[in-house]
Image: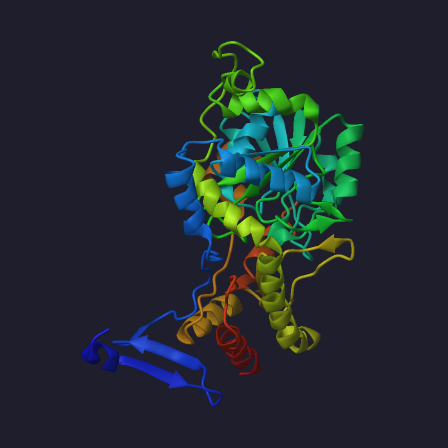
Length: 407
């Protein structure tokens, strides 16, 4: 930055020295972004190893196998397969569930689009169910009423890394002979009654996108909790071929045997992820510390009835994937976001409920009333939270939020 450009940057400081209103040429500048991709420092060394030492940059090399093994060992997963994204992990799960056109899939409306498209793309009818206002997870007490003779799968989404009520959901699924696909995109390192999210249903799907706690840029993983699906999952992931069996010496040549696509991430992506899995506990504790600091600072405003803070049920251990709060209403949230941006803090809202979207109305329906999904989504806003966030950055966010709620 040159001297003249620097002179145009106005930094209005609070009494404690934290940036309050950063502006450049009169335009608001976000100095604390909502997210920064995690970086532990060893990623590029492992990428170089994949390229220069292993000389293997396509899928299923040494680093991919290390990541798969880490997930299986640390989470007690029966089998884990890295994929090119959390989306493709869900797509593989949908294929393994043998979804046919007209089959129904029950899921929350408050989720990312790929929870839905992974099933609607192969002909499923989406049945949206309302959420619980305390966790923003699917309301397990409403699922059974949404089941018809066409229902095939239940897809619980563990919002913000906080588990759905999985005992109830699994009981419903078993009594009605349904499959359960956990969308645990946000749930890596979270547990429910001591069990890792993604390992409870028939399938679990993780995301390692750059917005997640652990990242490979674009990537994900499919967890398979019933070994009966193992062989077919490998085939689907290998473009519909039995190539994996060939490399294990189980067949003398490989051929096309089933549906499938190229769901293998490159070794360079897997090498990047491996560096972060080695530091998983450190990343987790760092994020939890930020989350706790936000919670403690803002708890007085919840006690005063000004905001609502996240609820973590006693049986859940979360991973601090995000810190959100709920304002009074949409207008209050909009004012809060604008206030935080004026103070350099990148705060954002989250999903627009899928059942109200054009595609959601085309490919699905809402079962029962939208009692909480829309009104609660309009109140929710997320604060900046990322690995390596400095104490100063964290305090700037806290100071700005407190200033708003005490105004």
